[in-house]
Length: 113
Length: 110
Image (cartoon, rainbow over all chains, first blue to last red):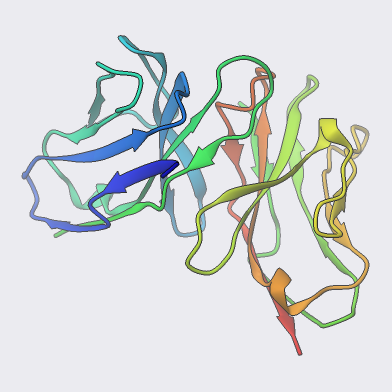
């Protein structure tokens, strides 16, 4: 199993550009989520999904959109990138029932200039 | 809103010395608490969770509801313990919508 994969690993955007961060998992996990990690602030939840067709907002959703058309994929879209969105983005997945470990992807380092 | 505080950004100890990484939380109910670890060039991964009362890689953590703390301890640090450690809290009992602390970078010196 590849686990949770994220592409790209690095990305530089200009202010106002849009892009999609890809996340996929091959563990048939129902739950998937996106976090951003900023220096000195730990990880903050952006959006999450409890299954295909179901998404919800986390702590810092503004400026980001998500969709979940399949169990495997959970892309994160930046509609109009801003310098404040410069961060490292992590995707995670887990089983839905019970208290389960979250499996994290390797991260995408995004710089917005 | 719930909050997790890790007061030490950096912590250095010598190999063989005891180590304690501090974690305090603010939440009035009964949270689920976790420690996640990120070794150099590796992914963030679960180290331990308080409900399991387990010892992983020699690390233990006890939930102290009176002091609202969940400190991570190891009696004899090893160089391979050098990593970034995050304390995390879940108030929904699902371990999925986690609130993370800002992390402590542990360096174990030879």
